[in-house]
Image (cartoon, rainbow, N blue to C red):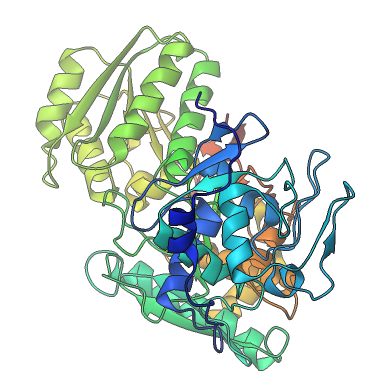
Length: 520
């Protein structure tokens, strides 16, 4: 651990700090310097990758960059968030520069800050006039340009307007495919989002602001114009992250679920999912199988596309299965989109595999089940329903009672009034099970976003929007389990239903009784 005493910067350093006063933002548009300063304020990281080192307390204990982000104590709006007995100062520009100066809770007094004295205080911890500063406030070592940028942003903190916010509109975006095998799903989700926001706009919008939707393709090079938030983005099951994925801690995202582990998105504290992600749904399948008689200690294989991010999910599943006492867990990655199902199935059968945990997408799931049927081999197959799609619902009858699917929501969650509203938004058209699930995801994401906008109030900002979402408790969408979020929880419904197709049902694609399994 590195320490250093508090000190006053040398004359040479101060000379670098004395530059022109910050330029205020105009109509919400930040200058390049203010944009860089905003990143430093909110994340503790320099856009130029220069080190930013913070020293805390009289002994000068070094803090990691993430822990020294200004927004952690002072909030995104700069007004301060009392926590653990500390009362962080208001650091908005009108407060820092008020003419009559400041009297702090510890009794220390000093005059108003200026550009020069604020820069000096950040680097030395000394108040204007020479008094020692607040010992709970770190002092910083950073490049002169980074300090310039930070102070430039502080000059507009609280007055800067986040992208996408206008006087009469708020612009939100989404990522939906318009071509390829998922084009139909993308069109269904687009129709639902446009219809939902259209109904809100027809009723007067949210605090007089109409919701505008910007649609881009997954993998788009940029989100231009930048939206206030993303709603229900569609990222294909086995693909890489979109280059247009939101930057850490910046663009809020309200989406159905994530393919990737939540840890992969830990830096983006503005991402909220309706349902547990694919990893969590697969873990629920492992937990379900562990409880089930005859599956408590199986010879199992994890089969997944080797070229995708699903390998990290396979690792998590392997660890979870071993911790639950599974006797044998083998990883069987396959390469490329051309899944050689007969060869994989032959290997699994020869190894006397009892349970297959499959992470392929719809056409790969269908190939696996058909290849197993051709060899008259029917192991237990566990797969997330959001990946398997309709292939699992019309599985060969040889898999009756042996195919288990994880779903984030099922018909029993659906209120008839909400189903009726969704049907009206879709013009009453019939949907396949996969498209219906996509429609529900888009509808509930839009409904959650609209409610968070309402709770944020007229003085809308991304910080207030995230604050509102973090306080949802058992929010009823009418079509999903109740949704709950906190500062440390980004899945609204943390678990999955596990069910098996019912071959005796009159309706194709029907499921048998389902069991809810909580995700760890």
